[in-house]
Structure formats: C-alpha cells, structure tokens
Length: 435
Image 1 (tube, helix red, strand yellow):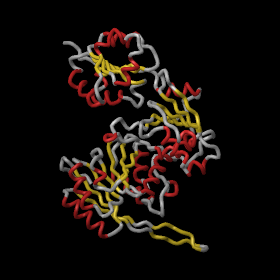
Image 2 (image 1 turned 60 degrees about the horizontal axis):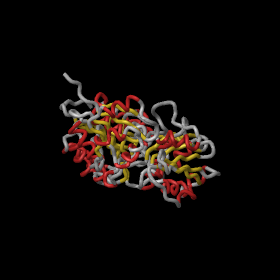
Image 3 (image 1 turned 180 degrees about the vertical axis):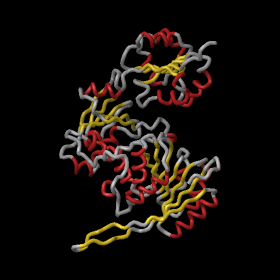
C-alpha cells in the first residue's frame, strides 16, 4: 500500500535551498506560491527547472481548497515566508491536515534577520504578531493590540512586532508617542527600528523616535523592533502561588471588582478544566479572567466587557500578570458572544440587564458544562433562577456574606461587604447530576 503524500511547506527568503528542499521541489507535482513569494522564488536557481509546476492561488482560501482537493493524490510543495511556524501558515496547515501529513522546512525568520540587521541580541526580546490577515472583513483575533504595547514595553523593554497594513509602523509609533503611561514611566523615549522588505534588493532599515516614525510611510512586509533604552519598569509580579491575587494587585476602577473571598468561591464553583474555553461576561476589571488564566494556561478565556475604562483595566491586568490566554472582547452580550468559540464554562458577573437573552443563548451553544452567575440584587437572583430553570440547567445556590475587621480607635470592628448570591447551573449532556 502506497503511503499518503505529505504536504511540504518550504520557507524561503534568505538562504539557498538545502539538498532536501531541492529534492522535494524537484520531485513535486505542484508548487503553490503567493504572488509576492513567486517573485522571491524566481530569484532561486531551482526556479527555471520547475516553473511549469507553479500555481499561484488568488488568496489563502483558494490555497486551502486546492490542498484539500489534491494533497492525497499529488505531491504538493507550498512556498512560505521565512519560518512557516513563526506566526506563519505552518500552524494552520498542521492544524487542518495533522502533523503526520505535513513536512516543514524553515528558512530564517524575519524577526531573526531584523535583529541581525540592527546588531541586537534577541534572546531577551518579547515577540508579538499584529498581523490580522489580508482580508479586513475576516481579520483574526490577536492576543495583543497596539494599545497594549506601552505596558508590554515597561515589562520587557525589547519588543519585536510583525505588522500588517492596519497595524503598521506609523500606527504603532503613534500609539507610543501618545501614551501618557509611557511618558510617566520613561525619561527617555524608546527607539524604533522599522525593517522593511527584508531579503529583497530594496530592503531598508529606518531608525527613529516614536514621533519621527509616526509621520512616515513604510513598505510591507516589515518588522518593527522597539528598544526601551532603559531597564524595564517592574510592575507587580505574579506571586509564586498559582491562585490568590489580592484586590490591590489588580487594576480596577471605583472599587468595582469581585472581592477576594467571593472570587475564590466563584472559581471553585466553576470547576475549571485544564484546557477549554471560558466566557467571562461583564468581565469588569477581569479579575476572574486573570485568576482563571493563571491557574490554567491552556484554558482560553474570553473577557467580554463594554465599558472602555474597564477594558483598559483588563488589558493592563493581562499584561501585568502575563496571561496571554485572555482575549478581550469589546461589546455588549449577547451580541458580543455570537462569534466566540463554544464555551465549556461561563461566568456572568454583569449582564447589563440582558440575562433573559444571555442565558438562552448559552443554553443553545453549550452542550455540557457549568455556568456561574453572581448576583447582588434580588431581581437579578430571581431572573437568573427563572431563566436557568427554563433553559434546563440543574441549579445550586449559595449566599456569601463577608465581614472584614477594620481598626477603629484603639479597637477593631467588623465591616460587612454586600452579600452575594452565587448561582451555579449545570448542563450535563449525559443527564447526571454532579453538583
């Protein structure tokens, strides 16, 4: 029985092909290359012998459709940029076709070349991608955005960024130049290096301050490197323990944060899995999201929030506690939930009066799992009980009353926090009750 063909992904741009890459290209039936990479491929001495095998798809979707239809019957080489597994097409190929069906031969990465051009070490650099994809209507969600860069720079001091047309060097520089946070933290302005068209004959390196870079136009593809010019300002460090952040460690506004004791019980009730998806609806400062993400790094957490000030707090906390598995979703539930991956767990800390719409949506999207809803108002408790019961959830309800000792003169007294109802709803596809 003949073994199935593997899809071969070969990175190009900087080095000549090694013997293995040459043999695979020579023995292929089809070579797929984008319009941009075709121009790069033409510079390789192997191109003339195989140019009749080259197919240039119009877009990424056409590329994947061709692979799905032909990879079992044809030996296909896909030409990629640099290292295909560094924020490139390699990951998606592996996810769709499986590791056993893919062969990857990398070139040097653009980031590696960029640091060599400016003669800076990069073992201590923080690497991020702001490349959301070529189609504005189908941009991928990114773990970080331009507004996150100032706080990232405080912590890491050396950052390399893969850009795109929207998140371009000028916009990155503008975000830095307008950041009051960075002006407070640094007496010296950071230095930016824009490395354009690396590996091309017209490659160019531009150096400047954020203000100097912000007014310029740059050709793609490019990489931006930011150097903070002084040791990173240490923010609050995550404690050695996996759980138990204090309210004062978490950025929040006006005392609006799930209190420590309530947060501990809430996370216990969620019975979080090692991996999966958590929706944190009405996330506020993101305290539940951050604690959950720190506990389980393989858990993907979606913090859904509509308030601009609170969104800034979530982003600050995500950077402060290095929880890149938290993704901020700006919007109002239930509409903001409709494009998210299906949840294994849901926490609702604030629903803006939309529980009657949110809970039925969760019931439709969640095949099994746990929903935890915190309620301070009796009306919220009543709505929650009614909607969970109507949606077929098995319920468990606790009421948490917390008093903290405060000093008064030469003595101490108990100061009570607002009581909180914690409503847990179970949806079990197997019908068992395990609450």
